[in-house]
Length: 346
Image (spheres, helix red, strand yellow):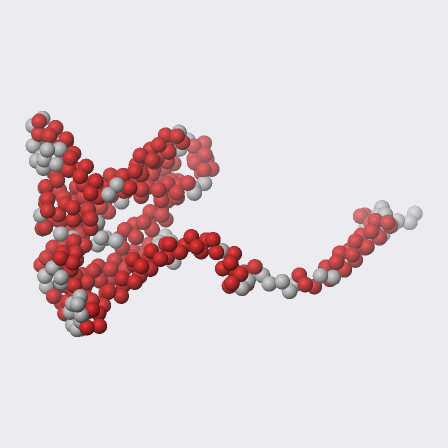
């Protein structure tokens, strides 16, 4: 009995179906070959510059105010750093003032007042890194742990508000609370705890300044960490909860590792700004505690440059501050790379 040697899938194939397949295949080939213009179309990424500018003109216009702000108040004033190498006189200008080379830096390093301001700045910065830097992180963790969205929004609004108060208002409020006749000082003195005037105590000035920063800006600084927590995959929390992990273990093993890159980046930026501890805040309280405890680099530059008219030496101090801050950012960023973190830049 003869057997068929055709494959199983072709034994019962309809001849009409085969014809239709060939026809459709031929028609699709002809349709593809009949449109040669599609191959010559330029990719989207290689459009002309004018076309891309016209398409993104709305976003570019939104960036103009920010670009102008940084250009006018940050980049154009960089030309004034040439004063650090001149015996600058305002009535002579940049071109008429004679060059003195490194004399301003030599005279600056020989002043005891300069080193006092540097030491006070480093002390206040160290206290702020230890006490203030963890405050926004702790506040963000607390707000993220709230179950009720209504309560969370209310708490966020309350802790954000102090950021929009000026330092004049903040210092005035602390004076009314912790001053010699303030609410807290009067209450403690009535109960036998003679703390004196906290606002005029040079020994606790750095802690006073740090507490003011925590109260004013901790809520605002928590925004970045809350945004980082929002990007963490919620399924990680669900899996950990199903495995029996409590809120503390979930925070330690999921939340903190999830926001670690942001924490490292903010710490690097803070180290680069370590020589800036707040000019207006310090200036408002300088007379209360004395110059020896409150003189920082910013106030040193202001009083020696603007008030006393020693423009060259004060500009040299500001230039040294900027160079040291830049070096700290670069060094801290490289150290973060060695620890496996992304840092501020690659």
